[in-house]
Image (cartoon, rainbow, N blue to C red; front, side):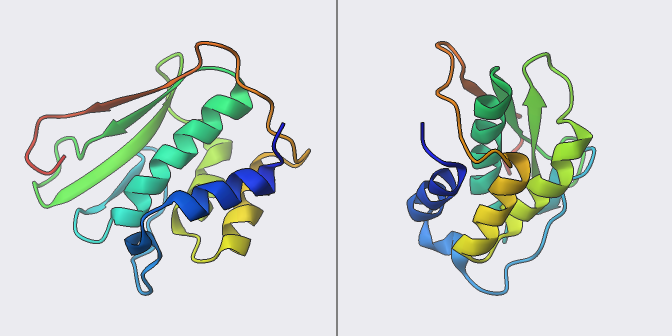
Length: 141
């Protein structure tokens, strides 16, 4: 079983270089997920997948990731994590999700992972646990 800090390191090393460019906007996770202008959301969109995968592993159930800006203007984009029962991401995950999405160093990413998994161990997933990805059909998605 890998440690939570190792899981964060693997996520950090696997992400595209543009996710670490300085000066990227900070985007907060709220009830509607992450929402902002599509330009400049590269890090948040990549890390939303990391958040969904981490959620699935830590709660032991499949999770969804929706790429959408819903009814917002075409220049906007967004993503949200959905629990396996179709419900919104638990409110106690919103702060750590914001921290993960906006971490600008491996240390801050690891700290955000540890906040969600203080015991430090990521259990092996149950067979069949997946992250389901959906998107709307608007041009920005």
